[in-house]
Length: 352
Image (cartoon, rainbow, N blue to C red; front, top):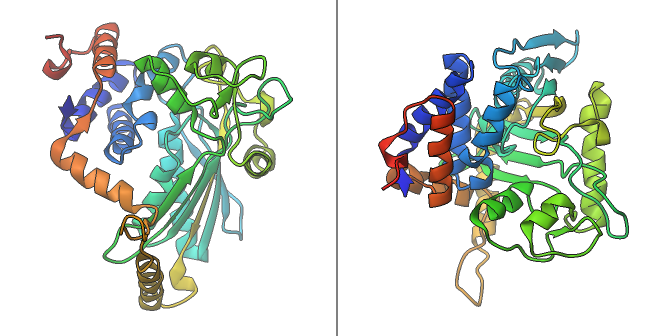
């Protein structure tokens, strides 16, 4: 079933308010969560509602967290203490902080500590691009990823998102986790009862598996093996270690350790291109860059080369028009959440 994004967002906001999140914060979280669905990143959208609500209701995420900025005088850097609030709010505030720093110094670097899962990293790099700036976003996450011949998870599949603005064209935007696939794809397969390719994860004994439950109990494989593994380690250094936050196995999983606070660290970097060159020159160069890539045509399909970000924009435009597609399994879960938290069950989520 396809659900209008504004209707879905209102329902999501009601659920967050039911677990004591202030209305303005609940509305912003809902907006960002549904935006992932609008852009086709369904693994990081309303599919995650259940675990967020549970952690808020048990106090593992602070419903009324009060974020605090700490300036590092004379530098473009700053620290944001998230007070264990929802990661969406913390990262959103960190981008605003970094944009302010970039306006003053030409670049802003903000470490956001004491935070939680923030959904898709591209939400925040794109926010910078929409303001005419370059956004670079990462975060450390609980260990989900290991290496062949080693049992157990070692490091998170720490994501990296980079967005660069263009004029009269969607921003360039790449958002990748450093495992072969995001954990959300295993969670979605578990919810839908489907199998997974045997290249995504290993079971607890280090064997390839097509069962998402066994892969979830085991660990994800890194993208490009040692290359993805090394980059994940580097991002753990640049986030948790450098900011004085938890790292590696000191970070708790919101799924596997639901009774523990996660306390993860985000890194937000924003660059103002106008400090390097006139913005007209910048956009002209971006246009030339785009046109050169679009001039590359596949001999087999006749298609032009896809630039990261174009698909997101096309999907968002389509889903804003036709609605966000939700599976029957997810609709049932949303109905159960409404009943659990005392929110009116929407007509579209009611059983036939």
